[in-house]
Image (cartoon, rainbow, N blue to C red):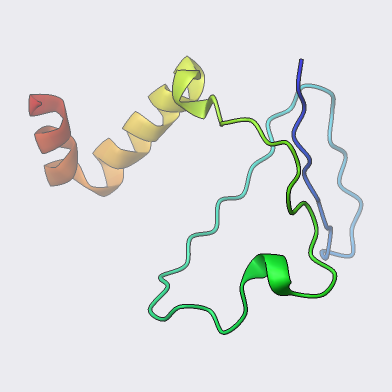
Length: 86
């Protein structure tokens, strides 16, 4: 089974135990207005460039989908109703 690299940094100054099989994720989305001055592949010291990557299968995760649906329903009820109508 292929694996995916994840870098975890603890800046809290306190010990955090991550138990086996626990789900860990942080999704950060930036609004990009302009094209970058330097392409990622052309930067010095880039990590993971040209690594063999597999596509995410999060969309197949029923537990995660149920969680997203609860959050969307709670935080954006009008969007949730439109989404369910389709």
